[in-house]
Image (cartoon, rainbow, N blue to C red; front, side):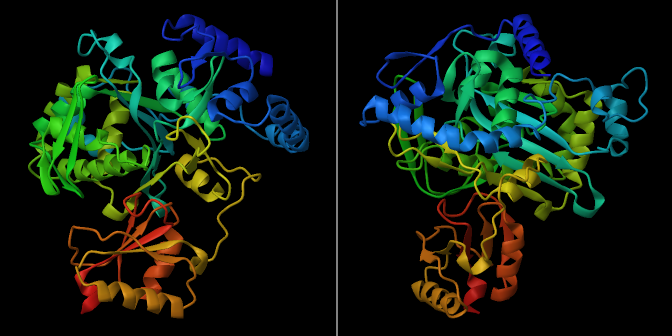
Length: 476
């Protein structure tokens, strides 16, 4: 079975000129390190000061200890690769279809007829500009991925939703024959097939059924064509980098961002937050984009928008599937659109402090909800509500309300409560932000508080499991 998989992978790679044949990667000091083994790369990347023989000894001890567990777990795993290069018939998506695709006008007139019949995972890649590439050409989609989202479409009538898993671009992954690198490199090294495969493998072989690649210029033009996107800018953002031709200058407050400003908003990187601050802003922009696309004034223009974006988007979605996706999203209730971030930690020992290392310990529930993968070897988050990290973020300008809420929660037995920086956008209603995807805990907290609108996203304090933003209704 393994030989068959290897044969299939090698065949696929040989067919694509996108896959690089390099056998080394570069550390931060530009020293070339051969991709001979993962432990060697870890030793160099982490910049460890312990003797190398001791590092190897520790690696061996850990390897022997875990080998029995890995062997039994691997036996239960599905093949290492995604479904991205399988046909629709193999995947079993399609029902009865016409032999020829209907015209776009006919599609839009009967859009409600196009529906998903089973869950689908779609990998969305926002591609960095490629120097010298003609806009819309194949080369223009060959850059690094600046944004990565895994969309899970769940058409189940009892729990219909869209869940979005944001994947930080600095997440460390292993590319075959090249070794450890950041996930943003995968598309540049091997196109959407390689990107999907390494992400699938990173997420315990989660199936990835389709992909969408969007160029930077396409994203900019989409925002401009929509007349801008309403987004709250939480702080003044000023940054200049002449080497990259990057200039960011945004004022704090609610803004109607045009295409260039929207790019500035999502590309701004805050000190000490690595890529997580950018992920938060990507989700904020995604939320604003969804609201804009749902506007009655925009809906009639969707066919024109699709035609305009044609050369800026590379995808293996069929036209009927695109219509089903639009129909599904437009008819989805607001609280059924949920977002979270791939769980992980920053490497404090690394020469690159922004490198982000996957940590799925205790996150089996998140993996199942956002990817459809269920593995018994990974624990679920079994912590009771009162043991979760709860951040209190005040939007009212009345500090006494923060103290009142903290005291109230402590009296009820909460042990991990802390004060986060005040949020500068005043809220009329208190908000309960589910930072790490545990919606059940959010509903329990809502019942205890007796108020609070639930939002499942990464918009809260990064260190929290749940963030409570105190609104004006809390003082009434």
